[in-house]
Image 1 (cartoon, one colour):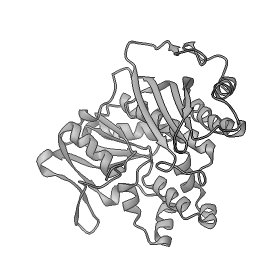
Image 2 (cartoon, rainbow, N blue to C red; image 1 turned 60 degrees about the vertical axis):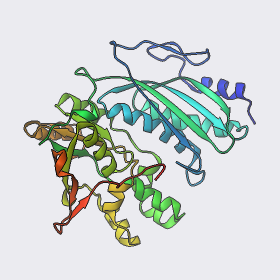
Image 3 (cartoon, rainbow, N blue to C red; image 1 turned 180 degrees about the vertical axis):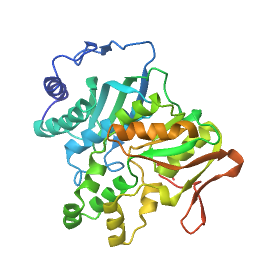
Image 4 (cartoon, rainbow, N blue to C red; image 1 turned 90 degrees about the vertical axis):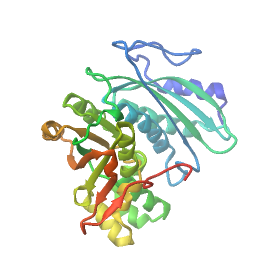
Length: 328
C-alpha cells in the first residue's frame, strides 16, 4: 500500500520529464504554465465511483481515461486545443502501486492522444470509493471560442460521428454479459474509452460554426442547451439521427429503442453544432476531408416554435425533459 507522498512520487515518476509550456510541473505547491496568446479556456469535471463508474466492469485504467476525456471534450466543444491538466484523486483506502500505475496510465494515455500534459493536482482520502476531479486548460481557436449562444434562427443543426453508442455499451456492461461484450466490442469501447473530437472542434470553428456543444447528457439535452443559450427552438428529424448498424442490431436483439439511447443516454462526446445554411455543407466537407463523419440533423427555429423531433411516422416528439440529469 502507498502513502500520499508515495502516490505523488509515483505519478511524478510516470509523467514526462519535459512538458512544453510547463515552467513548474508536478512537485510544487502550484504548477506554472506558459500559454500562447491571452485567452485561456478552463473547465472542470468530476467522476465518482458508484455514480459514473464501478470497478469492475470498468478497469481502473479506463476510469483514468474517461475522467480526462470528459474535460478535454469540453475544450473541444469550444473549438479549442487542450494544453494542460490538473488531477485531484481521492481514494477510500491506500492504493497499491499497481492500482496507481494503471489509473495514471489511463490518464496519461488519454492526454497524450491530444497533446495535453498533466502538470499537477492533489491526492487525498475519500469517505467512500474512488473519485477524480479534473481541470483542463486550453487555448481558443484564432477566431475566439465557439459558444452555445451563437446559433441564429434558420441555422442548420449537425453532429459529428454517431449517437447512442456509449449508452449501448453501458447497457452491456450493466448486464455483465461476456457474450454480448464479445460480439459488440466497439460499442463497449465507446463507453469505456470515448474519444473527444478535438480535431473536429477546431475544424468546425474554422469553417464558420455558430454554436457547439459536446454530447455528454444526451443529444436532446445538449441540443436544448444550445437552444436555451441562443434563445431558439429547433426541429430535428428521426431519419437523420446517425445510428450505427451494430447499435441498431444490439437494440433489436435486446428489445431497446436505439433512438432513445441516442436522445437520452449521453457520454458520446460527439459535437453538436450549428452553421448558416450557406456554410453547413462546407463544414461537413471539411470534416469528411479529415476522416471525420458529420451529418445534418435539422434546423433551428424561433423560440416560440418549440423543440421537437419529427418521427418517421410524422409524429412530433417534444424534446423538453429528455436526457440525463444527475438529480432527476
